[in-house]
Length: 170
Image (cartoon, rainbow, N blue to C red; front, side, top):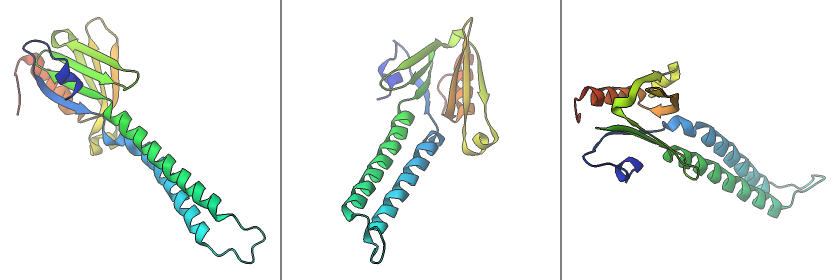
């Protein structure tokens, strides 16, 4: 059950939900792949015949180094997964609800009647892959910026539909 579903008020229904785009995983995945490649290299080196070499690396050290690289690769990848999963955005028939973070949680709940504008910024790559930055501005408030959101135009459309009173969409 999502954060928004757990915190609904009387008569409120979730109309649309989204989260961070998979692109937020790119850096973590690249680091994990490099670490895994180093681990594979260490395993290959441990199987190499080092006869005739001046210095022969101990196989146990190469195995331990490879294991550490694989462990770090998994940790980096999991950090990316947790980061992606810790951000939720929802549009209900009464509010826009945004929750970011896991250990340090930040929530934003704006009544639809208090939303002044929803701005979407999409870089060229974002347009191709389906991500962008959503900026929600409430009346008299500072803009709230949420980068790398999946399907930002759809999010904005859902907010506009709810403000216009169109109700649940298919």
